[in-house]
Image 1 (cartoon, helix red, strand yellow):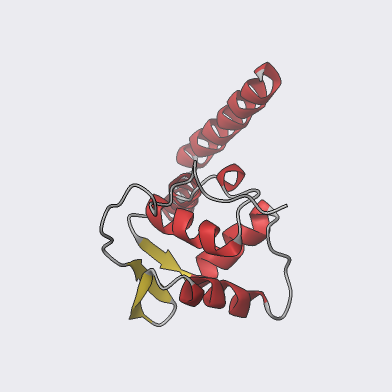
Image 2: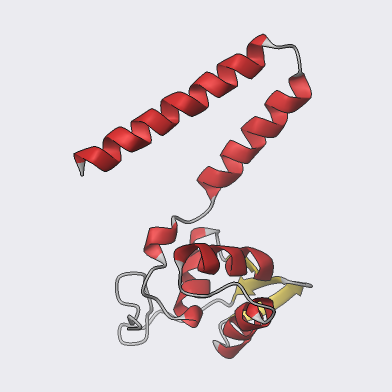
Length: 135
C-alpha cells in the first residue's frame, strides 16, 4: 500500500513539474492541452473498479460514475484498459451490445446513452459492490 502511494505521489510530482515547466515557457496552448488531458484523466472511472465485472455491469458502473451518461467509445476504451475486454475488430460492437442488452439505457445521440430512471427496490438494485463477478 505504501509503495503504491509513493508511486502515485511521485507521478503527481512529475505532472506538477511538467505543468510548471510548460507554464514557464510561453506556449499557452500547450499548457491548456496538458491541463485538459489531466482533467480528462481524473474525470474517468478508475479501471480497478471495473476489473472482474461483466460487460453489462461495467457499462452501468461507467454510466453511474459519469452522472448517468455513457459513450460507447469511452466504455470500450475503459473496458479494454481494465482488462475485461480485448482490443479487436469487434470490440466496439461488443461495448454497444453490452449497453443495448441491459435495457437500462436510452439513446441520447449516436454512441451516447443515458441510464433510464429506475424504481428503487431492495432486491434488484445493482451497485458496484453488489455487481456479479465474472471469473
